[in-house]
Each structure stands twice: as C-alpha cells, then as structure tokens.
Amino acid sequence: MRPAVLLALLAGLAACAAEPLEGALELTGEVASGIAGAGSGGDRFAVLRLESGRPYTGFERREEEAAELPLHLRTDDAVTLSLAGVEDDRELAAGIEAATGLGVRFSGERPPDAPPPAALAPAGAALPEGGIWTGALDRLLDAWCASRGYVWAYEDGAVTVTRQRSVAFRLNALAGVQSVEGSTATSEARGGGGSSNLARQALVTQTTYNPWPEIEAQLAAQLDPSTRVAVSPAAASVVVAGLPREIDRARRYFSWLNRTVLRPVTLTVDVYQVRYRQQSDFDIGIEGTLERLFGSAAGLELGSDFAGIVRPAPGTDSLASAIAALHQAGSAARVLSATVPTLNAQPAQFFELFSESYLAEIRTSVVDGTRSTNLVPGTVSSGFAMTFVAQIVSPDEVLVRLFASLQDRPAFTVFESASQKIQLPAYGSRAVQVTQKVARGETLVVTGFRDRNAVVSREGTFRAEIPFPSGGRTTDAAKSEQVLLVTASAGEPLGVVESSGEDL
Image 1 (cartoon, rainbow, N blue to C red):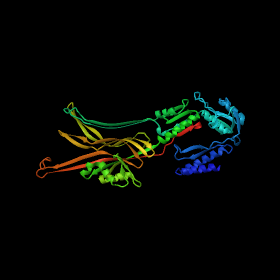
Image 2: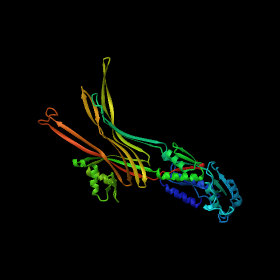
Image 3: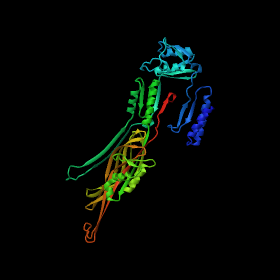
Image 4: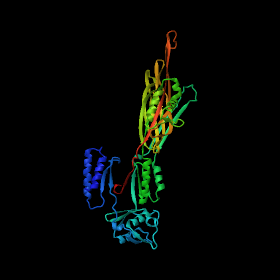
C-alpha cells in the first residue's frame, strides 16, 4: 500500500472516531482490498475517505489529481502545428496525433445548437502570421478547449477531450413544496333580538415555499440556451447536460445556492408570564420597564426607537439579561419554550395547545310519550401557536417574520334554567405579526399580550348580594402580561450532492 494512501486512510478514520469500531475495521478492509485491486501500474486510483459531514453514509469517493502529460510534451518547443483554417475538432485531433504520437479521444458530441467556437489562441494571444503554432501540448489543449467550452484529461496514455457532460445536482433539503398557514379570529354572537352590527377580528398569515421555479429560471438565465436543464422537485434534483463550460457555470451557481439558501436557521421562542406587583408597573408595561432597567445598565442597550431588540455587550448574555429584567418587573415564570430548526427562508410552524370539553347544550325530546335527554359537548383549545419565516440577510443577521397567537385557558360559567345546567367558556385570544432583524447574540422582545382578570367574592347575611349586617365583599385583580423572547442563529450550509459519470 502506498504511504500517501495509508496516511489518507488513517486521517479519514481519525476524523470519524465517533463511528463504531466494528464499522471502521470493516471499512478499512474494504479500502485496503480496493487499493490492492487497483494495482501499481495505473497512474490514478480511487480512495475512499471518511467524512462525517457528508449525506447518507458519510463516505465520498475521491480521486487523485489527473496525471500530467509526459515531460517532453510540456516544453516550450514540444509541438509545432499549423492551425490555419482548422475549425473541425477531428481535424485538429488528427494533427495533434500526428505531431505528438499520442491518441486523442472524444467523450460526447458537441451540442448541435451550441454557440460557434471562439478563435483558437493560446493564453489569449493571437496566432503568429501563417498560423504556425509552437509550444507545449498542454497549452495547446487548454486553448482548444477554452475556445469551444471543452475539458481535457490525460489518462491511460491518451488525451480525452470531453465535449458534452451530464451532471445531477441533488438538493435534498429542498424536496417537495411546502405550504404553511396560521390564523386566529374572534367574533360576537347574538340572540334573536340582538343587534345585527356584530364585531369580528381576524389575523391570517399564509406562506407557500416552492423554490424550484426560481432555481430553474435562474439557471436558464446564466446558462447557454443549448444546455438542457431538468428539474425534479420530488427527487430534489437538477440534471444539467451540455458543454463542460456550462456545467462549470451551473456548479458555481449551486455553490452560491449552498452558501445562501441551503443553510439551517434555528429560532428559539420563550414565552414568559409576568405578574405585576404594583399597579404603576402594570401601567408602564414591559416596554417602560425594560427602558428603565436597561437605561441604567452598563453594557446593555435597547434598539433604536425601542424596536424590541436587546443587544449584548462583551461578556454579557442578552437573553439572560432580558429574563432578569422581567423578574424585576414582577413575578416572572416561563410558560413554554420552543426551539424550531428550519431552512433559510423556508416557513415553519409550532403549536402547543390544550383542548377542554364542556357541556355546551342539553337537548330534550319526546317521542311516542318517551322523554329522552341528550348532552351535547363542546371543545375549546388554549395555548400558543406560531408561524415564522427566518431569512439570513447578512453573515450575522437573520430577518424574522413571526406570527404568534396566544389563547388563555378558558374559565367556565354555569347557566341554569328549569333545573337544567350548561357551561359556557370565556377566554382571551391575542395575536401579533412581527418583522424584525435579529443579529447573533441579540434578543427580540415582543410584548402587548396583556391580561386583566378580576375575581370578586361576596358573603351576605340572607343573600350574597346583601352584605349587611355581617357580610363582606373581597376583590382580587390579577394583572399579568405575556412576553415573547426570540433569538435566532444560522448554521453551516447543508451541501449539494453532485453525481456524474458512472454514478449518474
């Protein structure tokens, strides 16, 4: 086994120390047998390297760099060839074979509707008078392929010129089409004699994520019309066939797509409930409390015009500081916390709901003198729901478009008529839509979810409504506010898998 191959194998095994030992030993045997089968006579052989970040098995086939031309063909006077009037590929290949003694093979046909080739000139220089060119063979091959969009390689003692190539790019993270919708609504009901002017409020957000038409359109704008592009959203793949030059352009586009679109974004939302100790603090609200606290805190600041952004200073944590400020405003308790990973600019949802049943209706019927009573249940849900889109707008900033809905747990009131009792729920529902940039380490504070509940109890001598002479009346007003603390972070690109040749 060659020392370089052994070192590459050992480095690969060390990079995947987390893999089970049995699997590593088995892979070592497979790699060793594959290298032994390759033999030492060839100039190129395949090596399997362990890479934990790759999709599927984590293994990627890597090949050594292409072999160089023989030394005598890389000198400045290696080849002298007349290029005057030579435009046909096979005519030029025959001239190179006659001048060098090497075979020149072709892989694929030139697309019939490809643009005409540019003038053949080494390194951008014009041919001398008479069209006689003298120089190294690799420079001549570079000039030939550059003018026509080909690529060449030296293998098995011959030169192979690839004139058309087909490559499949798999974007596994973008498979399919996604549609997300969030909504909340309130409405008033009335009886038979009530007013017809009823109030209703609704807040709806709907997002459809389908990047494939844009990907196809962007590729078509960058590639030559002779290049064929086939997009498959179900297989999450794009097949590009055309000149090798166009394949390189597509590869650069997918590299950009990997850096910008195929990046995971994680949004963390903590919901806190703050119960105020004083009426004055409730009147000021969370906004005033944070401005007062952070205004005197060294190293911490709020965003301009109080956009709800808490910015940290070196050595401080903006989220911990915001939570500490909530505890100073009153009795703060975390209601729930949700950490939702998604893809850059791809919508995501999270909800945590609790459903309760109650007695909504009693139905009594008499059929043939038989009386029957049916209880009709109702269901009401409470909890938290959010829909968001997080988009990376700079290396350290994420634009968050958040729709959040909070619904209180209902309180049931019993109504009685003619010894029949039913329950009706009463609850508060709140929703907000926010669009804000959140930088790394910052915390977005979303407020406005206020709640005010008053509990009154009475004790009377004869009736509860008549406290005299020994009765009493107590009132408990609970003032609270729910606050959303939002942080965002972006991860490393997920990668694009490229397949060509025998792997396609």
